[in-house]
Length: 108
Image (tube, rainbow, N blue to C red; front, side, top):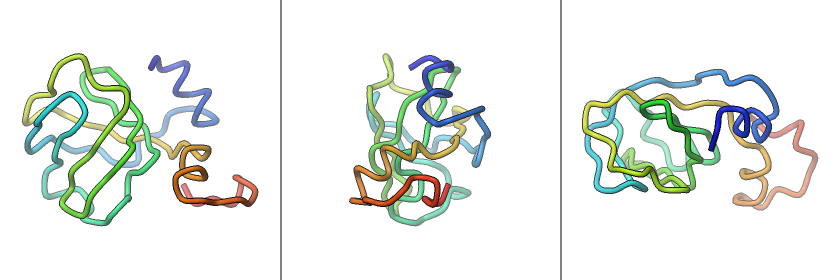
């Protein structure tokens, strides 16, 4: 996804909400964050993640700090790589969590 498409999907300018490093990476779709990342289930669900200037959408996040993205990165991100998370894609959160109310009240 391009930065322009991500901005359109997220409803505005990209604002980093978390920046950290990768502890490990197993594929182009799954990687583990370092200990500075929050250990809460679905914490980054629906957010945009950027590694090496390439952005993807988070489709799952475990309490073990494992991130799953779509579409896959072209190559497996390297351990120690810098990672940034951006605003929640509200439409994705609504669909994945079953919200049926107005998106303006959905927490970021």
